[in-house]
Length: 321
Image (cartoon, rainbow, N blue to C red; front, top):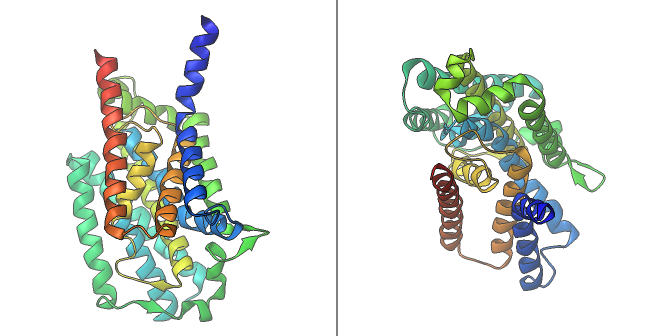
């Protein structure tokens, strides 16, 4: 009897990886092998890298039953600011990257201030940030794209175009971010605090956890990882576009929730998020290979998000009963 229970637990824990395997087999068959070709696998690694990096910060936010709708705007703003500094001001690439990441962290701290100190709902606070900084990204360049920085700063290609053997550096950066996220959640007291706040915020505060300070930290981390994702995306596209981050927050949220992080907080692991990122990235790539309409892709992704959140809500409802 004990063995049967263990088997069930193993199946439940690894179900998302089974879904990923089925998805790979499906696209491999219907794309006539193109999906699993070496070039396409490298392409998928590049495509999922910025989702994966941003999803680490989003995982922390959703673990405390929060949300961060501003990460798409942060990615866009980081693109525009970093490119503007390199092209229009002629500054060194690394200075541009550091300034851009600092701005991303400051936006995260602003979100933390609105949520923790002002007491605004995370949905409204981060939606306000999304609107403000999306507009600011347009104002910086009057909506015009910025290009040419790859010639003056060719090292920017390191983040998405250079490889270590067959593996793109952006995939390695993503793996490092996942490792850091896993360490924070599993090996540090910050991780224990994140789970405690998501499980029961009032009880966490009564136990001595500085909940408001933790919220500042979590939203700052979300801003940082979104900013780093923006740098990778800038390197990959070779041009800063004012719409580059539009809608990415929903893809990232889908990856995180699909990976088993509960929207009610307190439950989730980075390993599940890795699977969620691979599933969404492979789904997007596979539908493009099969020439699926962009609008149908939007419908499919919306259904996946709704199904993931619905299953999470039903699971929590079952536990409460």
